[in-house]
Amino acid sequence: MYPVAMGLRDQLAGILPADVLPYVSDHFEVIGDIAVLALPERLEPWKQTIAQAIVSRRKNITTILNKKEKVAGSSRTARYEVLMGERTVTVHRESGFSYRLDVGRAFFSTRMAQERKRVTGQVGSGERVYIPFAGAGPFVIPAAAQGAVVYAMENNPDAFRYLQKNADLNHVTGNCHLFLGDAFDTEHFPYKEFNRIIIPTPYGMDHALETFLPLLAEGGMVHFYTFKAKEQIPALIAAYEGKGLTVRYSAPCGNIAPGISRRVFDMVHRP
Image (cartoon, rainbow, N blue to C red; front, side, top):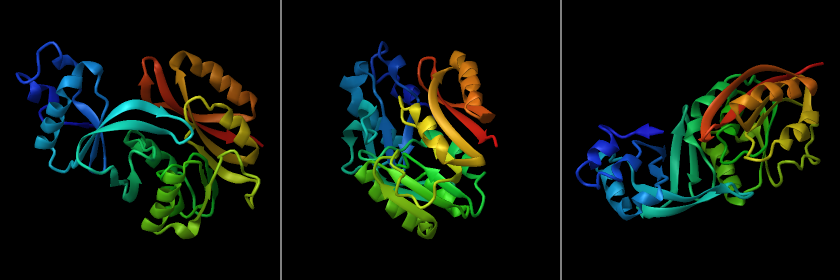
């Protein structure tokens, strides 16, 4: 998320009516050279004015999208309205890696950049790593660059196409085994045990941990993401411990709704 210089709200003061100005956010997501807004209905009549204000201060932005529907479905894509520009394909750079993707066809969140760096920085050379729900590769590429042998699964054909392109773009194809299909379908994998599993779980799919846990070697590490309220965490940790896991680290990774945050759990499979 990037704040606009001097504040978008300040920039629009005197241009937008005073009663709608508080609905303007000074922050929005920038993926490559594409700005992604989520304008409330109250700002609908002024959306083009807001878009013009953004590009007047951020010359690197060529396309502005307004999210009309939240991420949903097995493809994990949202519906966008194009406010400015003509294309939704971009190249986003993160932690020294490049990701080519179509923002309208492949899920990608810049909010997870530091978290991805934290997790993939723990990956060791020679590890066997499984990454379901791989998307365009923001966990896959840096893990493979660490020297791991990465098995990744993605169900969305468009995201999978960019996953393949990004493995090649970042010169890690030799360390990647990429599969198009259901993340839970691991029967054709040559290995049934992984040293590390990174699970960027989509909303409402908490059963993923129980499904993938049999693939984790004893002493192996799983990084599991879920969406919970703060008061649910103690009971959740107790449940994970009961499954033979030791919780080494847990932290929020951004709010998605009032009182609900994405949460990561780094857990070791006890022998």
